[in-house]
Length: 247
Image (cartoon, rainbow, N blue to C red; front, side, top):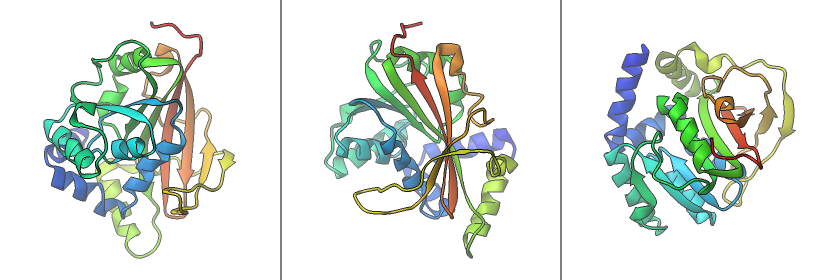
C-alpha cells in the first residue's frame, strides 16, 4: 500500500470511532490494548501528557493508575470519543482532552514529567513536534513513543492477520526480527494479574525511530523491543537531561 493511500486510510479511521475501534482490535488479535499499556511501566513522575489519545483508553488507564494527565488530539471525532471514555469510566473530566496540534502545544514550559505517544502518525517525525515536547518536559523528563508493532505468524488466525499487516505497512514490520540485543527483563504484570509474559530488550543503534529527531533537541535516545511468542513491539524513548534548559 502506498504511503498516500495508507494516510487516507488512517484519516478515515480517525474520523469514525467505531471504525477506529474495529481497526485497532480485530486486525491485531485483541493485542493493541496490551501494547498500549506497555507505557505504564515506563512513565516517570506524576504529570503526563498524551499526544494523539485516540479513543482515550490509555489516558483512562493512566488516570486510573493515579497519574495527573492531559491529552492533545487533532481529530474532533476522537476528542469526543475520548471524553466519552473518561465519562464512562468515571475518570477525570472533558477539560483534560484538548483539540489541538502536537506542533503547538498549549502548555507552559516544563509542565510535564512524561510525554506519551502510542502508534502516532507522521506528526511524530516533525521537528516542531519534538521541539514542543522538549519545551514542555521538565529536566529529567521522558518521551515514550510506541512506534510500531506486529503479530507473529503463529497459530491459525495470526498468519492471515500478519499478511494484512504486510499489505498495509509493508515489509518494514518484520525488519527488526534478528538483532544483537541486551535483555532487560523477562516478565511483567498488567492490571494486577499476569496477562502476558514477554521480554524487553535494549536495542542500541537500531534503525527504527531514527526519523524522530530526538538528538536535534537534546533528548537522549533509547530503543527497545518488547516481544512475546505472539507479537513484537518497538519503543523509542527520549530522555531530557536533568540540567537541560529550554532550547
